Length: 133
Image (tube, rainbow, N blue to C red):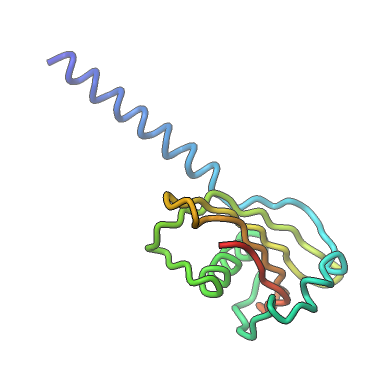
């Protein structure tokens, strides 16, 4: 009886540690500032543009949420798919009131997964979106 209780406690402790690390690693991070002018080539590239406008963005957390939604829609990645988001970095350009969102995810299928990038104005207008599948 004592062995089964000890084993149960160990399993619960391992699960708690696993989920704690998972949520720490997958939360979005504010990476400071960037300049929209550094990405003029991506913004001017027709292949990197979409015409949909998303909702207002107030901080780096909402930028990450909108960025993931836009990337999922643009690259046909559903929330119930095999993809697993493992990170999201956000930078802000105060002068142009725009956010740079960099997401990366993994997949159990080797040919899927990768990194995606998005530059979006705080009013939800996507300036550029690109990445790899």
